[in-house]
Each structure stands twice: as structure tokens, then as C-alpha cells.
Image (cartoon, rainbow, N blue to C red; front, side, top):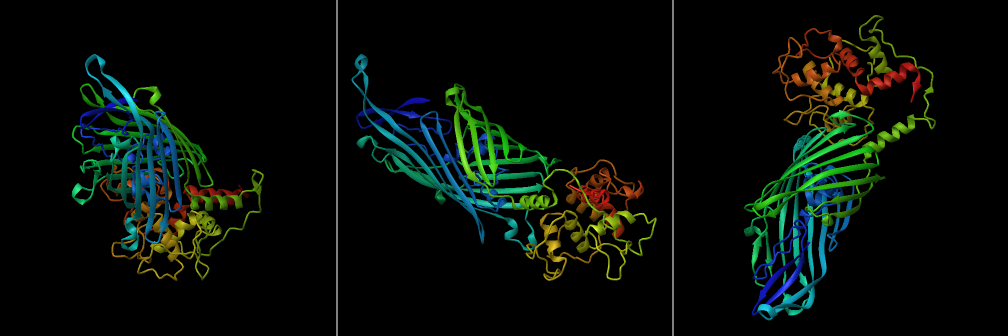
Length: 573
């Protein structure tokens, strides 16, 4: 889009052709003052653009530098992003960013530049019928922004790992904008300024995140402004508030579990402090039919001028992405307004790092998987037996299976003690082993009543880190405290990744009212059959869980069930 804008300077009137696109509007007034421009409002990476810029609750790569700095802490790897595009065929747009971990949190630095070369300058000469425009030169427009960002989990500042599901972040932004060339007519037509962003992210559960960003929140009195050289005029930069949600609908740990595909949905709402500017929405989806390939669609709403005032453009976006060995290659198509020639193509190349947990799982799977994808018949191992678990005992098979697989151990005297009540420490060990995780020497989550040298310490640390079980507000874990059935149901629901309703309308069991704190978790575990052995009787929420009950329940979870099936079939995949 090309517009002619008049500039009045002394006794002369000049005309300048300015290229405008969405938020990239070079606004000149009769006093030749320009509008300050936050370039992150235009584009922040091809992946977010392909999703309609709905990224406040999802930001998990270097794009977080420009969208929500709190998201930097979601990815512990070195992150790099770069993007380029030519908007409307005239505006060159470049973005660079990188972030990495430090001893005190994740640090990031970013740079964005938009430029328009060779803008014609004309002057109006004569009057009346003889009035005509004459070009006397040209100028180059350039706008840039440098960003310094920081993000960290709240648990870094609290004791005992509390606040691990909340992340905070901040960004300092330095702006510069103006024209070069054009002789004395454009002299000092430049300015600079600064502002800052605040961000927060809240992981409410394994498949849902919420984000909140206050963009350009500094008031003018604290330095949040843009100053122009020509007339020494300074202006504030409008505050933009964004709130967004990210929903992992399909995937290995999603709302609906699927080990092969992944589907995400993101929704943002944005409101600017500028008077008369309406709130807008951003909507985006990202679908991974393969582990290395993604498809994206979105709607990016932007305010627009209309004959009746200010309206809203709903710009369609789309994109694809490739991710291999930590490297990402992304493409985005973005519509700007109703004109098809305003559509812009963006390309990003970056590095997101390798998901170490996923790689470890893959390595373990590869060790177990033969090169020929056929089941390998192996000798069935002899099941471990215990003198205090006789023939006909109701939980004999689960106890033997889990003991043979190394998930549960017997005692030094050779007994299993099936009726012994399980402790919080024993449950933590069982949950971690049942998932097949390998614990190391590093203990990230520490408790004052769990000695670092104890055998349970690394298992407790991992179980708490993965949110299967929690510590207490006083900084203790109470590893020897017995576990009630209600507490066990809550931990097992998290462990199994079950969907819990916020509240249940009817009692899951006759002795467990719908208003009970554990009712949603108990209902979820009952629905999947984990407490099937109770036979529809009362639940007994205050009864302590025995080791035999724990073996029976864990044997029904998908993770243990698969290993048991391989054990009894004599096959390994």
C-alpha cells in the first residue's frame, strides 16, 4: 500500500511516499513528528505468525523474547531464531534472537529491523491549475529494536520447589527510528526510546498453560517513551495487555493421549490502552502428524481505520514447520488487510534444542527394539515368589509381576508384607520405577527430612519434579507417612495422566461425597478401572493403602501393563 503524506516545513510543502502495512505505519504530522513503533507487533517468528500470533501461553522457544519472556524458562536448551520477509514487496523485515541458560535463569537477546529504501521526496510548486509535484530527492526509512530478556521459574526464588508451575519474565526494549538521506529536508528526522515488558506463565496441568503479558508497561516518568530529535518532542508508547491460553489437545501427555500425533490450540486476547482502539483476538492451531513436520493455521486480528471509525481486520495465516535434531525451519503466510497483494511470506531458521527426556526415552526404546520390527521370543523369566503371598492370594499375580520387573522389592527377610501400609517415600519410588525412569545422582528437589544420601531421595525428587506427588508447605516431604486411598488416587491420577473434571456432580462411591477434595481424582481413577478390586463397595478414603493394593493398582496403569504383557507373553518388542 502506498500513500502520499504532506510535510510542512517553513514556507515549503513536501510530499513523501510512505509504505504502510498493518502496524508498520509511518505517521507524519504537520510538525513532522513520527509515531513510535514497537516492531514486535508486526512479526515475531514464522512459527507464531503461522499460528495467528496466538503465542502468549505457548512461547517455548527464542520467540519468547518478543512475545512472552516468561516462556524462556520452558526450554532449558540454547535457542536461536531468525526470520526474514519482504512485506508488501517494499518493507524489508529481519528478526534475530538467541537465549540460553545461566546460573540465575534464562537470558535472551533479540534484534528486529524494518526498512524501506528509496522513498521518493517531492515538492509542490506553483498554485491553482499550474500546481504540480516535482521530485527533488529520496530518503530511506529505518526502524530497529534491541531486546534484552530474562525468564525463570518461580521455584528458583522459593524453597522446596514450590512455584515450579509458574514462570516470570521481563524484557527491556530499546527503539530507534527515522530517515536518512534526503538532504536538509530530512535532517534530524529520527528518534529513539525505550520501554519494557512483563510476562507470566502458569502451567495449570499437563496439557494447559495460561500466559499474561504487559507490553510497554513503563510510564513516561520511568523512561517508557520515544523522543524525536527534530523538535525534542517525546511521546509515551501505548500499553498493550495480552492474555492467552495454550491447550495440548492431542499428544503423549495431552488431554487425549496419542503417542504418534500432536495437536495444539492457542487463543490470545489483546487490548491496547490507546483510546478508541478495540480489543482483538488471535487464534492458532499447530498439528504435528509426524514428529518432524507441523502444519499451522491462524487468525490474526488487527485494528483498522474505517469510514465509521476503527474496525478490525481478521487476517488469515498459515504455515509449515520442520524440526530435526533440534533445528527448526518454518514458513508462514500472513494476510494483511483485504488486498491479496498485501499478503507476505516469512521464513525462519532456528535452533530449539533436543528434548533430552524424549531422547532418553527413544534411546531406551532403541535398546529394547531389534533392527527387524518383529517380536523377539525370549525365555520367560521365573516369577519371584514370596512365602507370605500364598497361592490363591487375591493380589498374587500383580505382586509377582511387579517384583520380577523390579518395580517393587521384597524385604531382607524374603517376605513381601502385602498387608503393610505403603509410605509416601515407597510410593514415590514405585511411581518412578513404574514409568521406567532412570534416576541419577543429581537431586533437584530437596526436603529437609529426606537425607540426600538416602536411597529414596532421587526418586522422591523426580516424583515431585514430575508432579506425581507433592511436598508440604513447611519444606518437608514426610517420607515415612502412610498414604491414604484418597491421597493415592490423587497421585495415581497425575501419574497416569488422567483427565480430572473440576468437580463431580455425583459421589464416585457411597462413602465419598461429591464435595470431597479427592472426588475428581477418585472418579477419574474409578472410570479407568484402577480401583476395580474394590468391587463397587465403599472406597474408604481415610483407609491406608497397602502394598498389595499398590501392586494391584500399578499393574493396571498403561505403563506397567505394557511391560507385564511382554513379561507373560515371552516377547519383547
